[in-house]
Length: 197
Image (cartoon, rainbow, N blue to C red):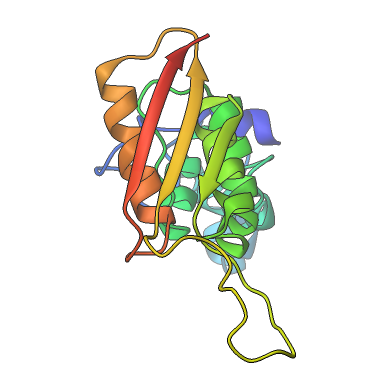
């Protein structure tokens, strides 16, 4: 049934509305004709009239019957992935393949779970670029039974991210810098170093 949903998918964009467009030959699972009173079941005009309504209602019934699939990033129609990404507040780049979009949306909750941590930053960079990030930072936490012990980390906070990309574009670098800025603790300044792989 997912193939029928994919065929019915309108173009991605702000003009997309809930519901699906007409699908040629899709039968209604709840035809209206047999539900009419007996008098109208024998009327040819009434049957033709409600048959047109069946064509309009069939995609809606198909959507409702498959609603759980719309909320699964692995099964959702391609045009609905953009909506899922917006609901989860993740940025899907224009031109990304559907598989890459599905991977990002399916990992969004895990990315939020580790947000503002080194692990989360590495994972976020890996999901968005496909490259491993080397992250160094100034933070640290420890405790001591001796008063006046050395404080871990550096007095000046810093965050350094180094990424190796095969063909980095200026737009990709700016976008990656904005993602790092949004994913790190607000009070820590960061630097991004992009190296050609």
